[in-house]
Length: 399
Image (cartoon, rainbow, N blue to C red; front, top):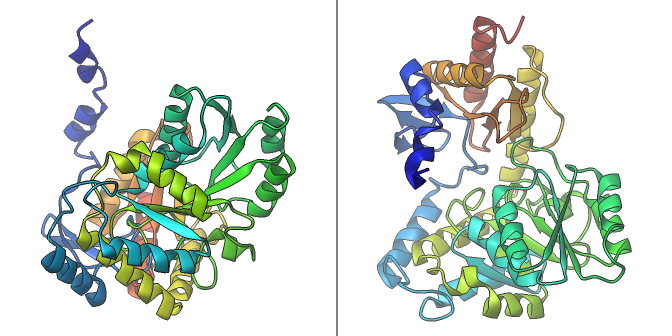
């Protein structure tokens, strides 16, 4: 069979385009923060990771513009060679102090960060134990580690008994890294961190937590899942990973941990050594966002107020909504086509959400994934809930 033959086998995009409900790659003409312009119409953005609403903050924009003017638009090389600027170092130092680790290291993207940590830290004869619902970037990192002769095992999502069962299959004393999302991106579920730490440390395993959806979100000051549980990075969590494309209003990622571990990753990670450095404008934007998060913890509080209001509203009109304290709120529809129809009708009603179908979620669990921001106003949240109720009744999802 010709290599390109598979490109015509999956006709689902063409089918949904013909039906007029294809929901991906929308062309966004303007970003206003809690709203965006699509097709000439302003719609409420309920599908963005811009949790604290900082992508349009004047301080973030000004810092990005200033860095581009001073350092240029690109570092034109990797951190390892010519792309290690003073602004990278200054940001990493302040970030490490805020997160509560000895050192941080910035990568070009969050996806590359997980590809850079896991295969670097887990090699031949060593084990990585990963939650089955971890983000695709973690999966990619474990697959690279496996290709390099590491052993990869998985456990059921947030099931600590199953984690213990898997850990018990590993030879006594074998070097092991347990990896989990802090907040699972499809469901908004928060990891059972105290039990994960207890059971992992009992087996001598190291712990890595992906804080992509929890930094700027969980904890009184937005420091993430450890703060949420009254625990500490560097003591309870060995390696922290995070991204700058969500609460930090930029692009990139980082890992944080003991200085000797970060130095090892810095000198051995292919994803760092062979990738171009974060551009100055992105570094400056993320650094400015960090300063805002530190001085305005009320943004985190407002985010949770908005998420709670949206949860209660969606539940009040008849949807089954989980209770986890995050701004990720999944609304299960249970069918591919109906999920696309629902998202299409919501857009017509002025609400942008993310449809998620199989195989990204199991059959019967197809859902609309909503995200809420600290900068959403009550009128935005009310319109989202009202639109969900209207379309839900229209499509027979609600009785």
